[in-house]
Length: 264
Image (tube, rainbow, N blue to C red):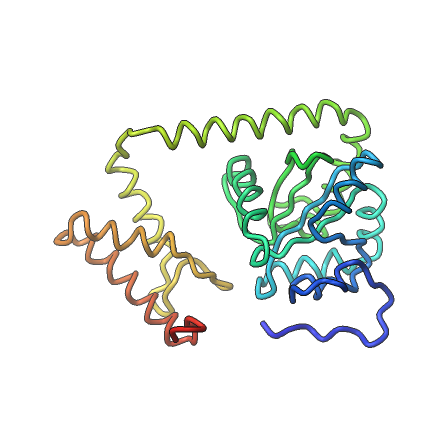
């Protein structure tokens, strides 16, 4: 996606105007009082005892731009954000370490993940609510972003100590689960592999390659799985089809102009 043209006489300018990231600069003229990830924002949250709203995305993310236009450029929604939260914007391509930590939380607590990633943190950076894209009004089975903001702000004011304690427990539980997963030597049932293959097969696009509907994103984990699924039993029909889906998708990606910047 091409870089957005910034207004010549913007009505708003926030701290992101001093950043180098193209993604952060795209939000420099939002009415939201964005901070970059750093001690200035953390100290403000601690001093004012406000929760942090952390928004993570990247410059070519379709739904990041949709949520920005629908919510972050909306004066009324921005007023709620500025009044109730300390708002931090992160470019996942610039800070993959921050993205990785909070994506683990979102995936563990919601069963899914993606960008834009929306996470609410205590002032000491413990996550307690997370999600991805929120629409400006109730739709797609998702609550309106404004409602989510109001509910979290109210809950924080009513019992922020309980929320902070909950955030600490969640972080500890995630640490324990990751530790136990690393130590586990249990074998995965064959049915799990078969179910994963069937899910990819059902969402496969035989005309354009890839999975599900547009906008599609590169999913290396899915393509890697298909090659390994094929390698387990290369002569089976499902394995052959897995490899076909994999190679066709890769060829379509290459034909569409997705290339390594260095190697071509």
